[in-house]
Image (cartoon, rainbow, N blue to C red; front, top):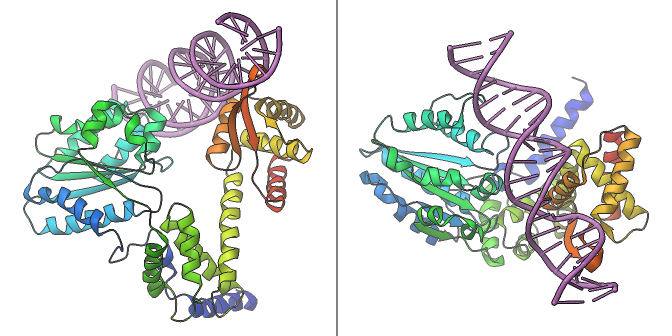
Length: 402
DNA sequence: AGTCCACAGGAAGGGCAGGCGA
DNA sequence: TCGCCTGCCCTTCCTGTGGACT
């Protein structure tokens, strides 16, 4: 290895030691020993699940709250404690945690059931079997012994939006077919209105118990950050105003603890890279910009080719000075570009879906408006700084060779 | 009040790839 | 190898929508 590279690594290790003691403690997936300001939810969930220790089936639970309000953390924490406790008792308790948004793992009914079966130690092929058969494999392994299985379906709304609530109906009725095992379902969602769109039968069985996770306020976020700062940063490297600033910024955005932690960690990383001895308010400002910028650039890079052409068409229209961009305009420019790139153009129906997807991931802002006799359409805007717009255009042009 | 426009978006189904079991 | 199954991307067909225009 050349000396210069070694020097970079040595410098990094030296610098890293100046700011962070444990960067991992500043990530949202880190599980601390205590969870501040969630006592009520922890106690409630623990008392709902407690009957499992005596062999009883706990009620199904439905948890809802905005992102970064501690739902997953609390559920995993209580689950782990329960599993530990059950090891000392007679009835074993098994916790199966699954995030329904995980691409290629649990984003379809087949994959979800297959993954659950795998968690119980039964291998299931990635595709190829009828869904009914996968359910059967899962039932067989599930009912192979007397135990309580608690299935945590995180971001369950994503799966329901994709394929309806039939699978949830199957899951909530699962106990009727089991002889030895007992199953409890915990559904977690960020969508506060999710429960209302469910079939009444699913709704009543899934939400036997409901737990609400309210957003953290700025003071509560400060407590959370202080706890993590003790674990993750060296003493005295944070300026006084950093924690209040990160908390206030995250509190503005529905009290998202995840965002507060990201801001704090990235601010620390920026200070580290600049060889600054202290993390200051200035670093938080840069972190705020960087997080948003990175999120958009990464999303754009991951887009399929056709969606990239659609986005290119939108940026092109904006650069021409069009401020009232509609689906039809985008489609016309898109078709032209497809001809130029010798790319097979998709139908307008499909482009409509792609625009909806771009809106959903937050790259564009599309609002459905009615122009009276001039029809109903999407009004498309791009809320990006000119610097970000240019960077995105460069990425699109380099990957599309336009 | 009725008509019309330019779509939005749901439903159904085709074609393809990947994978399984016989 | 073949038939079958699923997921995914896409098209086609269709109905619905809401406000300007007549």
